[in-house]
Image (cartoon, rainbow, N blue to C red; front, side, top):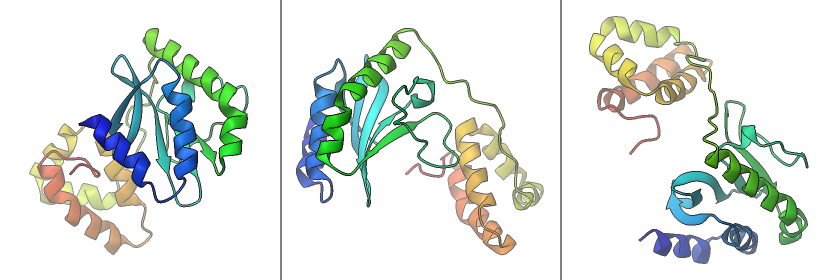
Length: 193
């Protein structure tokens, strides 16, 4: 089933089809296995997530799940966003860029596989987020909400806190908390379906 989804992804890509195909060719020529997760091709080693490809509006990417641990000797890797902690990616806008970077990409894949074989983990700071004031008030009003929130994984808690704290307007923060309450009570993260 996963291979069918991968084939469909590459065949029906409306942007960056040639570039995504070039990235796929590089990844398939390594020791990685091809899978489908998070609505995109994911490349694994002995079941562990190593890399994924995505087509964005202005570029396509090759992302490394533990990219923060890679040496990045060619200075190609970037954090996907300001709140990214472990993933790093390389942005491409042409097949020529991918072809030029191919030897380095192969080295990065081999290094990522080596990190996985060694059991290397990304050490993330615990509780590196602050509970928004509006969430604390919501906890006071609904102890079950606090209990359910505390039962979420640290990553899910962090995701919600970043989402809730983002708006400048307090009423928008409160509205986001209210819209997310049912999912939190159900034990789901912000992006869980």
